[in-house]
Length: 473
Image 1 (cartoon, rainbow, N blue to C red):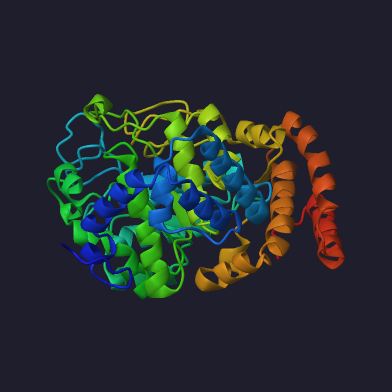
Image 2: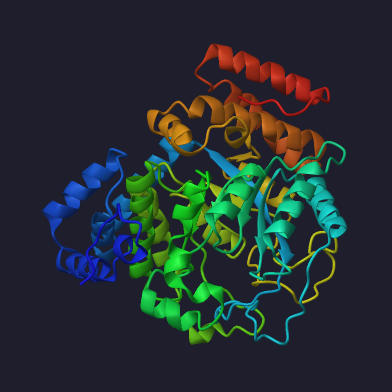
């Protein structure tokens, strides 16, 4: 039996299979233990977070009234910490060349049907201009793993290109990076390049299943992949994003794995993950999802999101356009704080948006434009935010978490959301979205508790209307 130790640097110890099996059995044994469940729910309602063991019990519980209470607590926590703000971003695919054999991804090395693409720096600039014309300020950079086509030097050059593009009033202010596990030295270079969050999905935390799904390539090394966030932190990147691809194995196992990973980062570095992503497996070129029998239903998916929000209250939660409009609506109110909009999962998909070359990583469920998503969020009572201020002001890692846990971060987030929304309205919004949003800004301004902050925000919004840009707290 492998000893569970969240402080360990060894992946087999901080993601202990024996511990997960033990927790799963414990959850089954206690799923009807009303006293224990009440204790967990009371702790959750205080916003202190819950452990992976406690989360497993709530996930296993099948009492309808308890499930509804879980949703209510998750919604309350979401509103207390994030208010009505929803941050928007877009993925940018640089290359789909890959040397791995991942059986759930169309980029796998033996796929002979997908067209392989790699953007030049000129093509990256064209993509960035297209994204800026939509109104995006935050990107998630994506690339397959390849020593030549996706080398660290290429990634760094691409980041420099992205940050350098100024098109009318457009600018990409934060580049998050989702690339393969690498060395401490390469993470240090990414940090020095000014990236935002380093993102890497575990795919599945089940070591045995992971090995079967990754038969070849560097990614087949489970331990090296699982310990990537430790190396990233050691390289100076204190905002990291974790996640699992739900549907590859039992969702309960991966839910526990995510939370154990979060607890490990908190134990070793004093700060947990900045974000958690919850993608579900989707159809794609050369991928038959019927071969993955662990698909997660919408109802279960909603419970996963709610329990994650309860367990890690101060961690941002992300869903992409993998999810449908209806699915996204259901999870926004109980946990999700960041969504993509107007996304393309093909290489070069933004500059050539009217055509598809078949290089997509997965099929998109929500095909709406960014403006349609912005308008939809406003109609649901949310405040679309293009804010990147925390990263640019050095509020990352433990500095961000300290402000978040004290509640002080709201003094920055609400004004920043309104100011960046005003920028969007002035530069990119349709007349329909504009007409809906102006009254929202006026209403939300009056809700800012600090008179000084409110007055500064009001002044900035007036300046934005006159053509000035990039105000932030």
